[in-house]
Length: 205
Image (tube, rainbow, N blue to C red; front, side, top):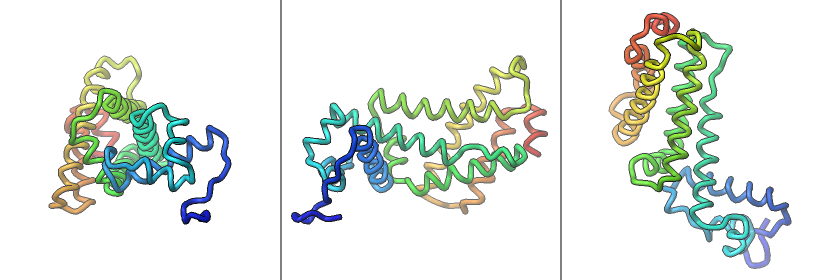
């Protein structure tokens, strides 16, 4: 609701609610802009608070940016969570489909975050998301935890995630194949890279 000055009407929220609101607004803005282009003033105006008050909830612009990226990464992991009602091959295809869908919706920020140099803390957040995705895949594989080939597979999965990122980034700028062709290529590349008969059989490849 607009206030008398035409801006957003100030609503009293608890500190945690306000912090969550600001992060949500920042994450929404991140869908269309690179992280460095997010306007603190615009977000404060949308929240109905002063620009200075935003820094009551975040000690610095960098802390606010890190909170936005962490929230966006959590969204990505939630959007790509495995559907365990599906067989492994279909589960992987479904997760990759939702990954590409999410990245396409957030292409500006995704391209900027992974293509441009970022601070150490930002890259740590990105690496943590990659590690979470790798662990998620490894957890679904029909292999015992003490399988002697598991360390090699873990490396292969991390390499596959890097491949998925790079190919998807290139596709975003060119789109020389259809989205479904892209997804099929990404899915088919995992068993080939892992070179493990059990995994290939489980994925139907």
